[in-house]
Length: 201
Image (cartoon, rainbow, N blue to C red; front, top):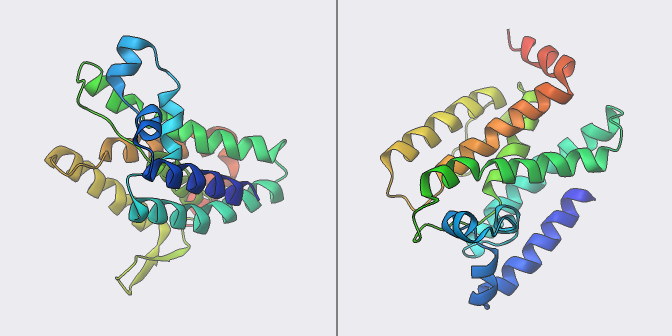
């Protein structure tokens, strides 16, 4: 239910922002505005808006597929306050994902980003930590392979594209969200994660 609530709220705000540029500008992550005008709320609000329908649908599709499973696992594992635990992971990843872009662009008034990709990366990699051997299949590529292999390839791809630049995508935010998801799971579910990763070998 938490995942569905996040999807519903994000979709509603994103759709409103499609037709309201003032709303989109207020919610965007703009490091310069955070640095110069102390608009710290932007580090969180950007996860609720997306550039277009394709951007929104892709993020929410991934969130639904992995978030619903992860949310259920938190309840099954008997985590105290599993709802808050899940929300901490989701929004913590989104917040952490802004660190590298902020450091790089706090004096760049033209840089801005938006979308829940950092949060979704956190959810995805938390899932991988718990279920590394789950077979995943990429869209348009009819080959299934273990989740941990996907995770490694994902990080290599994001690092390469970040170094290459010029894509208009915040690859560094994707990496930041993924790192948060991994660290979060090791901190709160160390034994379960170690056991899951040991099964790889």
